[in-house]
Amino acid sequence: MMKSPQDKKFRSGSIRTHILPLIIWLVAIAGVAMLFLRGTKRFEVVGIAQGQISQVCSPVDGRLKNVYVRLFDEVAKDQVVAALDDELITAQIVTVSATAEHLRSQIIPMQQQLTADMTDRELDRTEQQRRFAVDVERARIDILALKAQIATDRVTLEDLAAEVKIAGDLLKKDAIAPYEMEKAQVLYEAVAKKVIETENQLVHEEENLKNAQLRQDIFAAQTPLNPSVDAALDAIRKEATIQEKLIEQLKIQRNELIITAPINGVVVQILGRTNDVALRRAGEGTLHKSGEVVLAGQPIMVIAQGRPKEIIAYAGERQMDEITPGIKVELVKRTVPAQFAQSEVTFVGPVVEQLPQRLWQNPNIPQWGLPFLVKVPDGMDLTSGEVVAIRRL
Image (cartoon, rainbow, N blue to C red; front, side):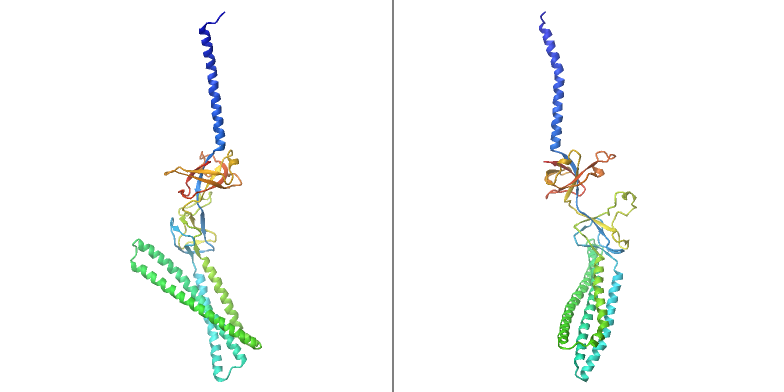
């Protein structure tokens, strides 16, 4: 029995109806496979631009004498940002000065006696040896007194420098009259001039000490040693040596009380540990103020770089094998104005870490990834904390 044309047409249409979904399904599978393969070759993650952050901590227990910066002030590396109270060290320096004067008072009668002896008779070799020894010790004590004076004046000079800076800031804001600024500047210049003059005098006295020591050495080489001469000045010599070492130690301790900025940047709030942030009371996140007591190692302020130098991002499990130092990536700044730049991965972390909460897709579900760093190229304008997209090239 022959089939009619109408039956053949119906059967052909039925076959096409069954094959068409299969073709669509196969095409969809192929598309998914291509997207998967492309995704394994060209991933995209987001990272956070970050600059260097340094905590400025107190080197010792003490009370803040001055804090010279405010929150969000720009500071330069090595700029003085705070100072601890130095009353104790200043008092010790004054004590050294008094000791030097006491030693000098002991030397003067001895020198006067030698001068009187010279008018009565010609000094024998023992008396000459004593005179050379006295000259040396007098020069050492004079140097000690000058060093103590310089140390004291430098403390005053640093305080006046801070007052000049504060007066300058107030003058810019029209908060004080110009003569107040001039008065502070004149005081600073006067003390600075005094320090220079004293330092010049110190150089002169050190040269006198060298000459006196040379004369004593030459005479000693030509004369048998008389133990009684050294015994006469032994106590003064030892005490002068102790005071010289003490003044050097006090200088070091004084320098520790002057706190400087470790980097160029901006003063920001003091960072706390993640678990402690919620427990802070009002004001605990800001920098400390003058008069507050701080402990050794306690942060006084935090300085952050204004321009970030690197971006930290995290690779998921499927992307870990592709992240190696040196691979080229594209950076995309999504905020206005948008920017595109090429860079490279500089470092890959050794272990998987938990992502910062702001990078979680769901704020209630933590995510994990392999951290890696990307260098911020020159010319790319980013702000610390800004989110940046990263694509592998």
